[in-house]
Structure formats: C-alpha cells, structure tokens
Amino acid sequence: MSRFKEYSVLPGFRGSFAVTIGWLTLLVLLPLSTLIVNTATIGFEAAPYHVVKDGKATDEVVYLKDNELDDKTYVAAGTDLAAEKVRAVSYGETAEVAPDEVELVASTRAERFRAGLRRGFPVFAEKVFNRRVLCSLRVSFWTAFVAAFLNLFIGGVIAYALVRIKLPGKRVIDALIDLPFAMPTAICGIAMVTMYAPSGPIGSIAAKAGVKLAFTETGITLALLFIGLPFVVRALQPALADLGTELEDAAMSLGASRFTAWRRVIIPTLAPALLSGFTLAFARGLGEYGTVIFIAGNTPFKTEITSLLIVTQLEQFDYAGATAIALTMLTISLVLIFGINKFFARRLHHAG
Image (cartoon, rainbow, N blue to C red; front, side):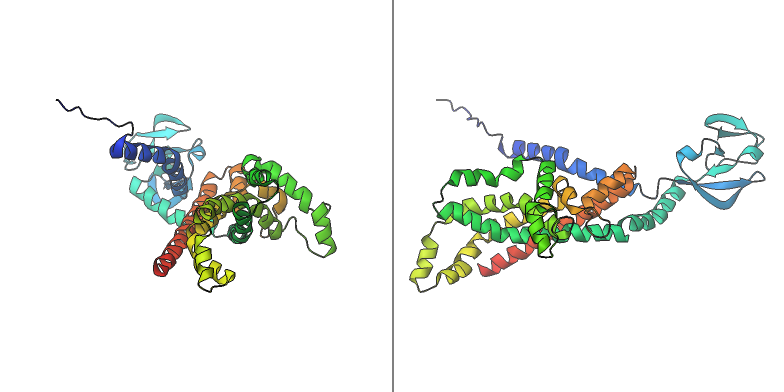
C-alpha cells in the first residue's frame, strides 16, 4: 500500500513563527518604532546654512526650518559663487541669479548630520529631564507601583474568597470583578470623582477627618486600585483553584500553623501568578489616562501624570517632545518590568 503524507490542520513551526512575527511586527514593533523615529528628529528640525556676504560664504551659520526659507535666496552646498550666474532657490522658485544676490549656502549632509546630533542631545535632555516631566514620571510610577502592590493583598483576599469560600451571590461578585474592563475609562473617572470629591459621600467623611482624597496622589492611587484589581484577581483565581488544599493540609499535618503553611508553602507556589498579576496591574496603571485625569486634579509638579503631559505636548503640536517623553517612559517601564521578572525568577530558582 502506498503511504500518503498526513497533513495537519496546524500550520507547523514555520507557519506559526511567520504569523507570530508578522503580527508582532505589525501591531507592536512598527508602532513602537515610530517613537524612536520621531524622537530622532529632535535637533534636525532646522538645518544649518552659511551666511553669504559680499558674494562669499562665511563661517557664520544660521539654523532655519523649511518654512523659513520662503523669503530667502540660497544655493546648494559646493556651489561656485565666483561664477557670473549661479543656480539658486529664490523665494521658493529655482532661478539663475548673480552671486551677490545669494544670501545663504546650504550645508553638506555630513554637516547637517553633525549639527543635528550636536543640537539634538541638549534639546532631548531639555524636553525629558525638565522638572515638570520628572515630577510627572515620579507621580505616574509611584502611584502605579503602590496601587499594584496593594492590589496583591486586596486581589489575593478576593481571589481566595471566590475559590475557597461559598459566598452568597458568588457569580454576581465574580462578574463585578470584570467591571473595570467593560466600563469606559471616562465613566470610571467621573464615578471616582463623585465618590471621593470633598462633596462626595466618601470624600466628605474623609474631609471631616482632615484627609483629602480627590485631586491628590491618594486619589490617583485609588483610581489605579480600581483599574488594576481585575488583573490580580484573574491571575490568582485559576492558580488557587488548581492548587487545591492538599499542600496546605500536608503542611499542617506536619505541625505547621496555617500562617506558616501559607508563608512557606502556598505563597511561594503562587509566586508566578502573583508576579503576573502585579506586572499587569503595574503596566496598566502606568498607561491609564481616562480614569486618572478626572480625579488627579492635573496640577503641574504635584498631580500631573505623564500620560496627560504627553497629550498636552501633542495639543501644542510638539510631536518630537511628546514622543521623547513617551519613549523615556516606555524605556523605564521595560527596564522595571524586566528587572522585576528577573529578580523574582532568580528568587524562585534559588528557592527551588
């Protein structure tokens, strides 16, 4: 009997790899590359031109943008100004003019590149490392970290209750956990302000105790707690369900208290799920915009988040500045996330 080749409905390694890389490039790498490209244009918005005096190019250099050349007469680099007539761009049109009519000489590509780098680094530092940007980065990263850390405890308790305890209305509670996923962020922000503003039901009680919730970093943290909670709960819930009670029972049968069993056995076993939930909540908190802007107050140097600052730069048509801040925030986020994963991976390796 002849043997026929059996085909699988699965694409195999090559097909799967090609599709994965293709979609990853299209949806992730290409959009992120625009941040690098736009940031790299800082310093190259204006090109250097040599000033012409008495028909001769001088060492005096001026930096002009393309739209600033409409009322100028200039020639290309290397043009011989000793000729009777030279080919130039005069008031936006190409024409033959006398050398004494030329105002500027364009620089070479190498000169433009060196000038762009020389001007770009200080401009980038000015856009990214000024006090307002640094304060917004501190607010964004600190509140996102605190909210994600607190969600480990709050989400852990909720996940434990949903898995281990028979609660009345358990399905309703389980569905409400996903509410931040379904609600538009603007509605979440308005609801948070209504609750925590000084005139709100919770904010008024806190105000009597001398605590201000809305329009402070505390309010931002509360908003990020609400947004990040589902990530922690959904990461821990299946892990707790798969874990069962056998390990806990075995530890307690050997004389360990319930606290010791959780500290030495259960929590290390749940560490990957805890890390996953923390990382997702932290990353979502960093990028949150709609919910936070309503409750933050958006006061520069105090409660202004980086996402809002990026939008402000875009509204001012400073695209290079906006992408520079975004690229800085992306870089710091990736370093922190990879660092956290590496740290816990080493801890788990040594514990194992």
